[in-house]
Picture 1 (tube, helix red, strand yellow):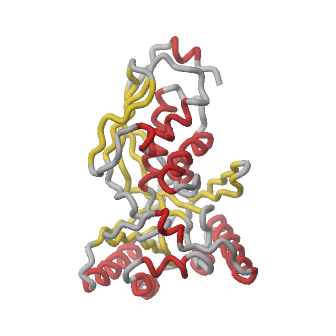
Picture 2: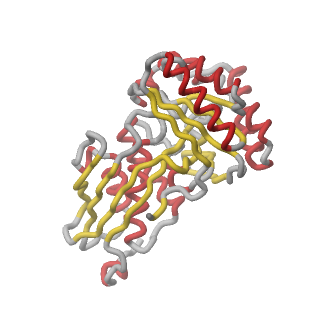
Picture 3: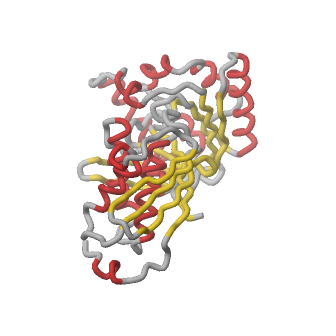
Length: 319
């Protein structure tokens, strides 16, 4: 793609401030293919156009993460994007203000990866669509977990729910959320690395389990399109991954049971954990679930953070 005309133009904006949302991936039945975007949990980022070529991360507040471009997910994602463009006679600086803890299971690395490519794209006059940006943000995910999965970066960039139909070629479908759908997410304050959570998974599954799983994926997608909350609830079941990973998360069974007792449509592990999510109809129910989940961890004397959020229809946005 030619950017000659960008280079000669004085760009209107020299810097841009972004909200980079947290996301819930997998959504029980959709391991590595389904995700949703949260509305009120996320990082902030400033991306700045500068004279010096290349990409530099100049500031990270709120987390102890590497400033070296090649060792930071936002830097890796940005470089992957710039490699596809004609050489620019300017560069970019990135400042990251982390509010999503690394290893929390709500898309910390995805928020940084998505924010970097979105910000640079905006400053270049949008040579790429949001959907095009997913492939670059995935390279940041590869650095974080060893696997270039799109189920966090896709909803972070596109908003709503996203389904990755295929990885080769990359084919992503964005799905609107039913209006009354809310997510409650509790994050027990332990770190569970994605790479560790992946190491407990089996490479082969039984045909019986696979049939149940793809029935639920189809049911969940159908439920979202038809705004059938009961169908969404029945479909939020994980036959394959959750039984293996839930043992890594303290109080998991109790939290999940509590969510159902307080009106959740469904509940499961957020991403690779340790966060646990519940989806519900209406804010009142979501708040009630949050209180009940909090009580479980209070009794266990385990520090936690909790979020109640609508589904964010926009993804990364300019502040």
